[in-house]
Structure formats: structure tokens, C-alpha cells
Image 1 (cartoon, rainbow, N blue to C red):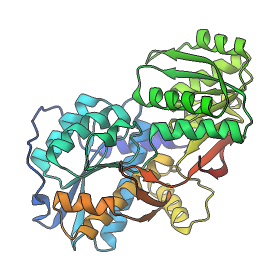
Image 2 (image 1 turned 90 degrees about the horizontal axis):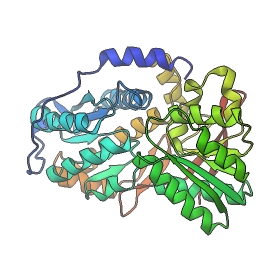
Image 3 (image 1 turned 90 degrees about the vertical axis):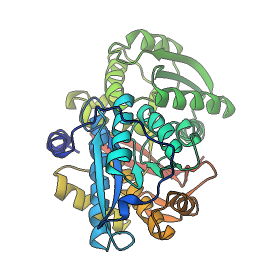
Length: 389
């Protein structure tokens, strides 16, 4: 991932322009019109520019590699997949506009997207109205799949991550006290924070502080100083990598000694934080969806191919993007049709062996599999163990 910024710049020049129109989607179910030609059209939504583009670019790159492999192997239903991605800039309104274009103009039969939770929630509402089969690779807010029976996800949900990290803190790190600092304007951050708090209490951990900040904040020393005064064993920081970099360095600057914990939004922090400050996240623990140290040959081949193609190392988002497209393609083949209802039924019954492990979907269409605990040492991500709460 050392060259990710270069990869981001290159990838951003190749994607379709973002959509700003306001076409309204209809209420009719998908009929498979997009498969009537030589291809099967599958839409994509991701932030390919903007503050969280590191996630969107990686996810989109993973999806494109999956499409290439699937097409080389014969495609779906004997036709090649035509992947149609749009840049929504990390904005819910942009995402809905792009979704409308995918449905109205491009006439896709399924959707892989969105990437972060707020745009995904907005798009899910529209997809349910249209009955369009949808898999978010990385949208973690619990409310996403609650939107309707046709909405699935490849990643763990926010509550699961919070609960898992609370269990890890208690059972593996022997934490007795914990503090939380979170972004109260972000669904992802709030969801993980609340789940961690409840689960930590159930595990016998005392919550010393729960400090909120507003989205876009740059100075966290007031919250961190309060936390330091309480001297907790661990501090849970369920935010995205850009905020983690700022919070961790400021925690180091004020002498906060507690172990730092996080969820999958931490992936990418080493590329955001200056090398001179990387010791600020040394010895932290966060949950992730896979480990690059796995001996699985399919995963190792993907890691190699991704680096050769994009000149940068893949991250969790790339892996999940790949798996999300793989799941959708497998479901379309299993359904034997591009009919929306048949694809949804196939997804519900799917048993998929992917880069993140063996995945099935529960009754809420969330994935069932183990999580990976990752730490940071010597400026590198390190696999710790597979863990299940």
C-alpha cells in the first residue's frame, strides 16, 4: 500500500464521471433487460474521489479484477459481465443520483455498492423500491440490510465489530477499563461505539469515558485529556483511518499510554500517518476481514495480481470488492437468470468460498464467518489471530 496515493490518482482518471442528474427510479421489479444483449450489466457505486477515496478506489479495483477473472472463465449465463461504476464522491445525494442513472439509463440487473455507510443506506432505500439485487462490499451500518430482502453485504456489520473488539479486549487483553472516542456525526462510528460500550459492560469492563466529537474535527486533545485522566486500559477508536491518524498522534503527544483499539475503518492508517509518527499506532489492535499472511493460494494470487495491475498493495476493501462481485456472479449463475427475485433467492442460499473465507448469509443477509485481528508493528500490519466472539 506504499504507492496507494499514486494508484488513487491513476484510478481516478479512468472512472466514469459522477452523475448529477436527478432521475427518479421506478417501482417496477428488475426484468433482466440489461442481459438481452451480449453482456450482463452490473452497476457499481464508490467514492473514487474525495476524503474516503482510498476505500472506494481499492474496492473498485478489487471488483474490476473479479470481473476480469469471471469473464475469462466464461462470464455469467454465457455472457460477459459489463461493469458500470460511478464516482459518488462519498456523498449520499451523489450516490442516489448515480444509482438513478444506473437503473434508468444503464439498466443494470444488479448493484455492487456502495462503500461507506451513509451513501449505502440512501441507495438501499432506492434499491428496495426497485427490487434490485444489491451487495455492499464494505458498508457496515446495521441499518443497511434492514432496508429490505434484496440488500446483502460482504463485510461485517458495525455492531458485530464493536461486540467482537469488546470481547477481544476482555478475553485476550485482560482489559478491566475502557474509554471510547468517536464521531457522533457518522453512522459507522456511532454504531461500533455503541455496540462496544454495551458488549464491554457485559464482559465486565468498566467504561471510564465516552467522548464524542463532530465530523470534520481536527483537534481531539480536550477529549483525549479527559480520557488520560481516567487511565483506562484500552481506548476504542471506531473511526476511519484519516481521523485515526490524527487521534493517535495527539494521544501520543499528551502521553496517553492505553492500548488503542479499532474496527475495519483503520485499514489505510499507515498510509495516512507520517512515518515519523507511526509509533503512535504501534501495538494497537483492530479487527479486519482477512489477513495478507494467509496461505490460501487464491488469496495470494489475488494479492500478487492486484499489485502487478495497480502498482500498489491491496487492502481489505479491495479484497471485499472482489468477493462481493464474486458473490453476485455466483448468485446469477445459480439463479440461471437475471430476474431480480431469482437472484435474491440464490443469494440467500449461497455458500461462497472467497478471499475472506467461507461465507453464508444469516437471516438479515449479513455474512457469517470469522474475523481477523490485526496489529501494527515496525510500521507494518501484522496478523495476530482469527477470532470469533
